[in-house]
Amino acid sequence: MTTRISASVDVEAGKVLAATAAGTTIAIAGDPPEGDGSAPGPKEALLSSLAACAALDVTSILRKKRQGPSSYEVVVTGESDPEPPRVFTSILVEHRVSGDVAPEPLRRSIELSATRYCPVNAMLSAVARIEHRYLLLDASGGVFEATVAVVGPDREVRVIESGA
Image (cartoon, helix red, strand yellow):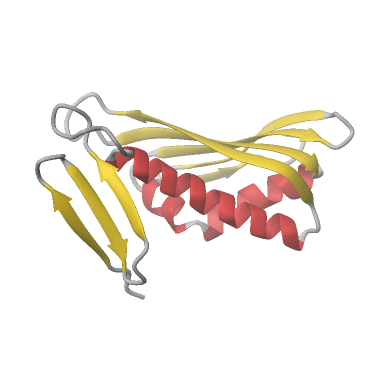
């Protein structure tokens, strides 16, 4: 399977408009002074891709499990090496969910995304440790939080089972 992006560069603004084969676009900008800072930078776009990939997987799996989130937010935080090229060394993916969702189906949905389905997670985990966790406020007001999986460059996948 081939994926193709065509990027038009605004040299003066330090901005790139990347287009998919279907014509949808994504703006990416450098931070001043190299760019105008008007759009996410390349590393922010990469973390956004991870958030979107995980969120789309998890919502699809939750739907199949007949779970009904009323809100869902994914917050991704990346720590970088201080030396160039400043690659990510660790990433935290926190799934913040509320609504008619039980902890175990949510945990399993995140586990499947982190260990099987999300290609962005698979690619980034080749160079960085990625921890997936959730914070759930269920329909009855219960608060649940847990670490679900840790994957990383050592190719070890650690799944934290429910109640562990």
